[in-house]
Image 1 (cartoon, rainbow, N blue to C red):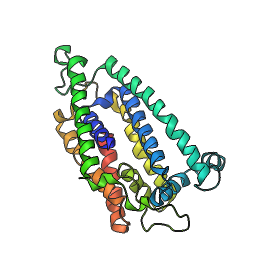
Image 2: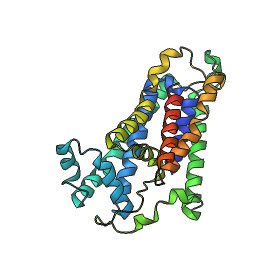
Image 3: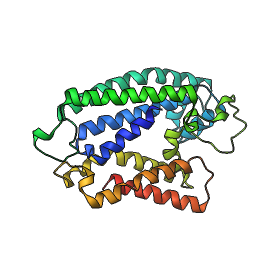
Length: 276
């Protein structure tokens, strides 16, 4: 559920040009990648039917490095040794994530946040304390309130997980559609859109790398400013949100030629939006 707020935070950073603060952006994207890794490891540990095949699909991407796969899986397929390794990683990585969060806060405190009003004078910059601190506390309160409502009433089925994951894994029975957790659907759809596994892996890596290395475009914008004040970039940026939603929906569907064209177009829109 935290990924919903994390995506909002990233979209806000893109809109207000936080990408032009390189070390804050790099550390933030490291937090995002580590969070996805931790969530994926935790998703696999129950060894349900859907999580087993999801782990099989993801680990298949590393089969071009045979020795690494054997070390990672403890064999040639997902099994008990794999779960033991994933459990250890799932325990260690949160401590690494905590360290990166401290680094992210340090760089944010040193360089400050970008200014929505696009003013370069310090008079227009909000103070880290109390403005930013209380703003973060407000969002943290909203996060826990929404999480409590979701856990109590389950009002958003998308966040509840797949029903098939309650079934014990069966390596001999492949699900009709392998559907990962919703926060992985965009990347999983990118992987599915290409018949070649290598092409899908390259497209997925390009999508993630474009988000991480987006700060290299800062040389084109010497003045940090909000996208709202650049009308052309506003028009380019807004379609990224429905494109992300379309990719997420395609990740849950069985694809045909028409849907593949739509999905590849959505990837192109996202790449243009984030590298503008």
